[in-house]
Image (cartoon, rainbow, N blue to C red; front, side):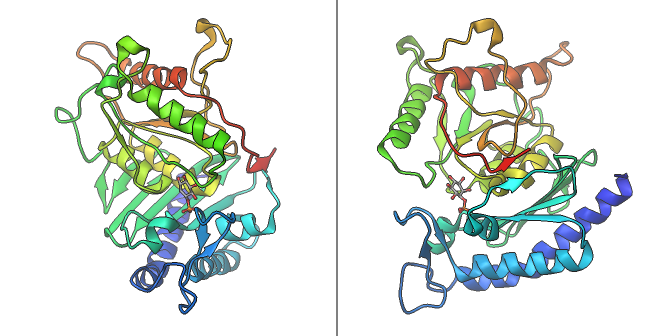
Length: 328
Ligand code: IPD
């Protein structure tokens, strides 16, 4: 895959995101609640009303997939609506694979809360290499491709830069974005809430004393905040590959780092082996850390601090069991 190929794939993803933008905006301003009288009513996916789909999700995914099939007939397609509705996980291959969430943050979409958008990622040889997130209501278009940087409406990311962007050395200097997800069993919710409580609790009581916790309602907006420099960390267990494939490229190309998000709380893994592992994007557990500038006279210290912060977080959170999105 050459730089020229990547450029072309990125241009395709941008053109597709822009093409479906008007339908997204139109749907956003219509009745999106669980109203029976609207064509745009949200349908319940999990039986608990925490996860929903609208006609807009299906329309956008179909439009994008129809175009991709025309342009790249041999490429594989993974989409929130078609893949989730077929109930089959994906067989992960080295083939170019477009990974699309037509409306990330559907709950925000149906509540007319603007942190919602379209996510288009492309993986080649199992690695995410192109990412486009378009948040139409905020008029924010995030674009990135492997080795060519990340941008917001053409401005290089991170948008916040040194000296305004400092080098945090502990969770107590960090803002975390996370989500409550749509699986609401007592077991899942108590693991999640206890993990968040530990992260927020004072250090003398064994916690991380995180400076700030935010929930925007969608993995895509969360990852754009990390790429921008407006949040130090994103951690979530349970989102799907279509929620973060594009965001992973945008974060890493902005100088950020991504890791496996399975926590170590209560595990007997010795301290020396607690090294944040590379992200497996089909495993539904992720930590992302924003770009951290090197400390004065310490080249490479920014990368080390990214690992340190991820470790500090993973030490305090539980592991969660979720069926993976794909098998290799
Ligand atoms: C949602 C988000 C969020 C996660 C939810 C997902 P969707 O995506 O990305 O991170 O916590 O579980 O449902 O369904 O709105 O595309």
